[in-house]
Amino acid sequence: MTIDIDLDAPGKQTGAIHIPSSRDESAWGAVMVPVTVIANGDGPTVLLVAGNHGDEYEGQVALHKLANRLAPEHVNGRVIILTGLNFPAVQAAMRTSPLDGGNMNRIFPGDPQGNISQRIAHIVAEELVSRADIVLDLHSGGKTLDFVPSAVMHHLDDDALMDKTAKALLAFGAPVAMILGEDTSGMLDGEVEGRGKVFVSTELGGLGMTTAERVRWADMGVDNVLKHFGVIDGDPAKPDHAPRFLDTEPEGCFIRARHDGLYEPLVDLGEEVEKGQPIVHVWDINNPGEEPVVYSAKRSGMFYARHGKGLVKRGDCLAVIGVDAKGIAV
Ligand code: CA
View 1 (tube, protein in one colour):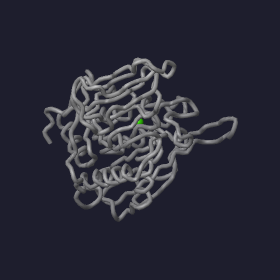
View 2 (cartoon, rainbow, N blue to C red):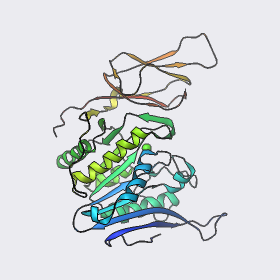
View 3 (cartoon, rainbow, N blue to C red):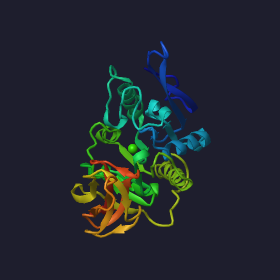
View 4 (cartoon, protein in one colour):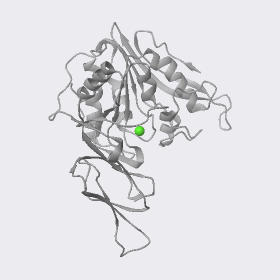
């Protein structure tokens, strides 16, 4: 495994991480994951990542735009850009790698002797995360989820890091700042947080495509985070409305399907719901005339995320309700 540019040199370079991949279609071939570095003078290093899941597009578009426009004279410090972390998945428009099934966000810190996905994770952790002070990993819902555009973090044991991360989350400027209750083992998130570094993620939309509005949120957010840390000059742009700070307590915020069927949303993303309010009907496609299964909100809050397809299967994430975050002083 090699990186064909010098990550520590000033100026602007684009190259690739080479992961040898000898296979039927290409003996002596390699998977080449594009990497851009733009460095100038003193300042922090920000690692910007998209395509951690290959079918999530807001971040990929925003980082291609940034890699195109950002010149060394704009930068105080260093910006490292990965437009497509799980590059085989990006090429195939899939969440996970078609080469080995690897879900890049479940295999950190990777393995230098492992499969292609594990080797990508390993070199990114050892060569890129190690150099970064701040990591911004741009996700969205992919083909099967849809989100209110949001910047995302986790509850952290380290109060100072929690405070620094929350401030970066608000600086991002998306409509929602979200504290996600999820197990971060194997995730890039946990890899960075475990090293005591600022980690900001996003959920900027979804459905395996993007919109002009969502790309604008991504563009603004990336720009704002770079300004917040002084890596580019200027003050972060202020959106019309301050971000709403939400949390997802494990109890009752995540609603999973217990039945297969047709998904009827009773509310749309961003709407407020009350505890007990029906939010989704699931209709049995085999039995017209029967009553639907009713799924109700177990908490009052914002209808923050939903299943992104018209049919659901038992076990699918039907909806996520975000509740107002408590005890966050920033
Ligand atoms: Ca994702």
